[in-house]
Structure formats: structure tokens, C-alpha cells
Image 1 (tube, rainbow, N blue to C red):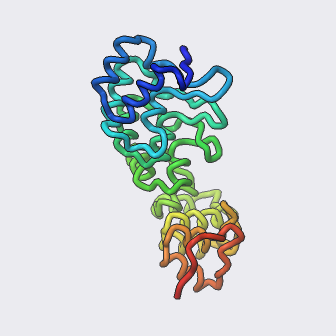
Image 2: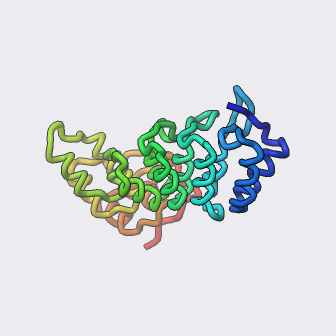
Image 3: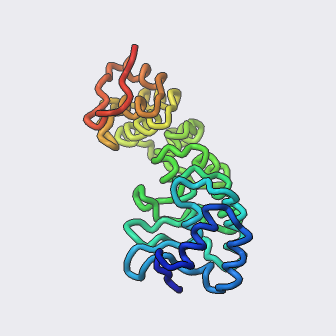
Length: 250
């Protein structure tokens, strides 16, 4: 696979066309340079990404993003290439992290692997990134399109029917899993789900991700009903990571 330095004029031109949503110019560049659709922008042994990563790069939502995916795939772009760098995310991971549902759908329609590993979060799937980064539209679309869900992801999305099934069969999730589920429900602003985990032995005072308790996670998400629920259980400390987060108000 060919590599193009990011400062190469061709790399600059194709990146600009993608970000402008100019699929006509993009198609012309792809015709003039037959290997471009499969090229990587960057250097071997360093960081590099593909043109599908350019479409899905933060903040996403570039004009004509879904059509750009179609043009690149038609020209021979691989659908599931991994970013070469600290994490091996695919373009689907990046679309999920940007909450770019239109591009996410275009990638899946083109055959992207919904269960591909490589996420920033534990090396997992695109759904792991979407839930961790609170990209709820993308997370729900991934579930709609058949993504396998973990308990943590179900908690953050309020998929209580799936959670109840887990607790109705052996082995029943233990207290540690219930506690993480409570934190995830707070992160996702899911009060009913948070109540379920409290009723199943979750520790509401646990300091979890980003050094926040469930209260801290709920405050960060603006989930007032979850904050009130947790306060009713005697928890007020948002955790050491709450500095600069929204303050509690009465």
C-alpha cells in the first residue's frame, strides 16, 4: 500500500476535497491517481490514516460524507483499514466517536465490520467508543444495526430489558458488575436503569472512570434525575475528577 506524506500536494488536495464535500473533484483525483483510494496519509512506521479516516476524522459531519464514502469504496478503498498509531481504530470507530450517523450507515452499507476491534476504549468495537464518548445517536444506530452489547453499554443506553435478562440467568452479574453498571447508567443519564443497579447491590460511592463517582458522572452529563436518585441513597461526593464539572444545585 502506498504512503503519502501529509504535506504532499496530492494529500493536501484530496483531504481538502473530502472536507469540502466536493465529490466531483474527489472522483477526478481518484481517476487520475488509481492507487489513491488505497493510499495512507503519513509515514510507514509512524502514524498514518486512510482517506476513509479523513472522512470520519473529528469533528466529522463533513458535507456529503456518506456520498464521499461511496465514491472512495467504489474506487477501491478498503472499508476496514486500521489507523496506524497508538490505537488501531477503523473509520467506523471514528464515525462513531464523531456521532456521524450518516457516514456510519454508509460504512456499514459498504460492508464495514460492526464488531471490528481497535477502539480507544479497551481496544473494543465502535460501540465502545460511542458509549464512552457519549455519542448517543451513533451508539443507538449501532445497536439498531446489530452491534453486540456489553452490560456497561446496555447500562449507558438504558437497555433495561437486556439487563434484566442478564440478571435472570446464571451466572448472575456480581456486585462489581452492578457497580460499573450504575456508573454507566449515570454517565448515560439513565435513571430507571440506575435504580435497577442500586436495587441489585451496586456501590454508589465507587470512584470510577475519570475519577468520578456515579454522582460525578451524572453531573457531567446533566442528568439531574440521576443525581437526585443517588443523593437519596446518601451519595453526594462527585469524586476527585469532578473539578471543573457542573456544580450541584438545589
